[in-house]
Structure formats: C-alpha cells, structure tokens
Length: 244
Image 1 (cartoon, rainbow, N blue to C red):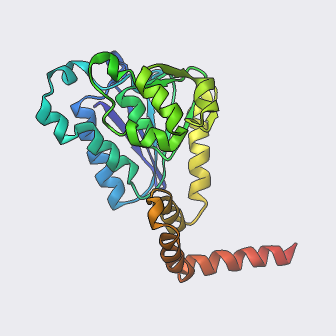
Image 2: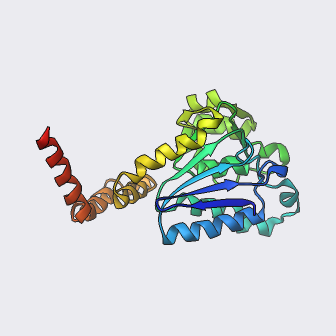
Image 3: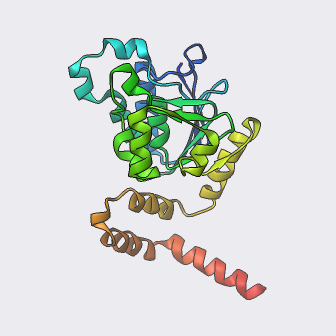
C-alpha cells in the first residue's frame, strides 16, 4: 500500500508511504487518493495528509512520467486527483516534513492548511525535466503566494527552504519533526470543536470564485441561520456568559 489510511470519527490520517522512492506519487497512489476521496465525500471528515520517513513526497514517479504520452497529459491524471482532494467538504491539512517537490508540492498546494518542519523543502523543478507543473501549481500557487512569487518559483524551478516557505505564506507554521503530527491533530481538534456544516460552508465560500461573492455567503449563511446547531450553540454561548 502506497497510502496508509487511519480512520477516526472526526478525521482521517493518510500517510504517503513509498520510502524507497521518497514517497514519489505513482499511479497506485493516485488510485488510493481517489478511493480516499470517495470515502470522505460520503462521510465528510477532516483529512490530515503527511508522508513517511521524514519526506512528504519528492515528486511524481519520474519512471512513470517518462513513459506518459500526450493523451496521458490530457487526462490530467494527477491534477484530477488533486482537484478532488481540494474539493473535499471538510478541511485538508498537509503536514509537510522534508521534500515536497513537483507533484508532491502540488498535492500540498491542494490542502486548505499547510504546516511544516525546519527540514521542509518545497518547489516545482518540472521545467528542468522538460515538462511543466500541470497538476495545479500554475493556478493555485498564485492564489497562495501571489503572482510575482509564483512566477519566480515556477519559472526558475528553485526550491524554497522552510523559513522562505513560512515568510511567503506557503505554510502557516513550523514545528519540530516530532511535533508535526501533533500540531496537525491540534488543528483538527479545533476544527472538530466547531459546527461541521458551518465549517463546510466556510470552506465552500473560500474556494468560490471572486465573481460569485458576496452572493454565495448570503445563501450559505441563510441556511446556517435556520440550522438547529446555530440556535443551540448561540443559546449555550449566551448561557455561559450569563453565568460569569
């Protein structure tokens, strides 16, 4: 198994696990990601994505990429899986240790929240291999770090270290390697304490094109205003404040 999955009531932990290939993303991994997404689409939970043995994913599997054809490119093999990850109903947290390069970086870009370790190295060296980053980097990275920085990273193919990734806003925090998964679970705990539907609607609004705002918020908020959870949570809040 190239993807080790642990299921819990409110979250799923998925570990990229091809240590002999530095967790390079192959077809088996893509198939496993589709299976995982199918489960999370049916039973929404927060997803924590990480990698085994101090590496997130050192790229796509070059041996497989070398044999892919124009028809394979048009199928968007990796891109389709990463889009599905991005569109999961509940948040996706990428906990990144070590290398996240090429397809590994693009999988990380698909997450809603990215955290890392001081050993983090992230970037897209595809042009040096005669291809381009075509699984989300050219549209997601500008949204994350801005057009100027995205252009520099993608056109030069250079790799950011952990401090640069933090300064650029590519990750939101850095943690010691032994604390990384704990930090991801702490984020998942905070998410789990909130109302699931409100969380899902917030994620939906965040990924909605600018042209559809603010109308999308009005409709999503209208549904939440009528939800039993809203009345219960606000009543509990007011009762707690009254007891102080």
